[in-house]
Length: 106
Image 1 (tube, rainbow, N blue to C red):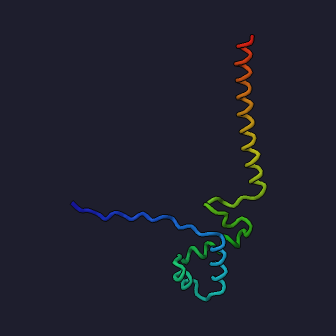
Image 2 (image 1 turned 90 degrees about the vertical axis):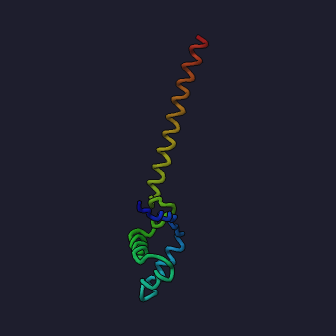
Image 3 (image 1 turned 180 degrees about the vertical axis):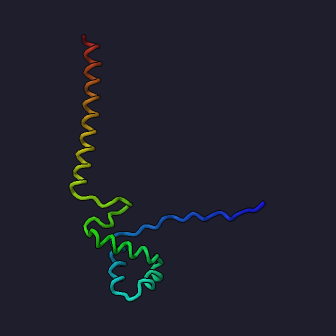
């Protein structure tokens, strides 16, 4: 019977927006991105991806916690949608309450 070593579970590393912007800036100053990646303990592809994401859309890049960058309009839409759901729920509760109280008094 062959036994295989258990794979060690590694946690996903997270980086702040400031750190990513600093790495991007350093990547343009330095001649060799491979050396920079090795010094910082990052993969070279990750630095290139951060650069591409930042230059694609500077305003919404690196929003944090894996949440895609959303425009102000999208955030307002989501807020109004949530408020609408809450109001519908309150309305339904009040409808049921009216039905209950009208039976008791009627």
